[in-house]
Length: 344
Image (cartoon, rainbow, N blue to C red; front, side, top):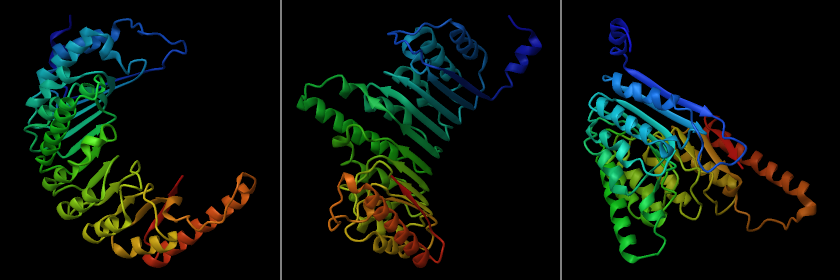
């Protein structure tokens, strides 16, 4: 029970952050025990808070899979979203979960949503996530990170029908993302199930003409060219997890020529000749580039002298010299505009 004045004050709350970071016990347990206080807090929020515009849920440590263990918490979380679905503008959910499809379903009615960040949670199948992204015409920021689809993970039989259905649903999901025409920032973890996702990626960028920032885990040359064509305002591109076998420098240079890129991270891209020549080409291809992140792979090593374990100091010295050459090339080609960073 709460007083009338306190109840009125609660109604004026617009933002809420549900945060818990309890360290995981050193002794492994199949099912952690909770005292119920978090259940009660979440239940109270679901009953009392009806005009929220921003909900931020971050469950870490021992609580990272809390919603998997507590049915009451799952119901309360769904009720909290249901009560505020038509008011929510910003929603962040960072927690591990086997399948949060039912919990997140009320977000399908959140037409005012501007920021949606989902990290660590799972959906049974791609179409469950697609439904949430429908009717999001004002969405500007979308983050889908460390996500898996249980439909595919739980059936390893390799059945052709399953593969075809999954591929079709991934295709439909990317088409739905393409319909988010006001999207400006996209963080997409498509590392899992890439056999199905990369072939559909180029189509996804055709409707995202306002994108300014992309962070993605898996991309191909075809997708890079699609971004170059359909995302003329792109300022930041991070490809930290992409393999050099998937992306060529030729397509990266085309992107730099067509888009006003300010920050570019391509540590997985491999070079075909000396790294200082590649750095020169990258810096000269863009007049807006300021931050460039690469790795030692940008310097082709086919003609390297053979260096064994006992000559490790020589290998380190060689790597340091090449980095120095690339830094000098960046300075000369850009007039000191580009800051070059190396990732291991």
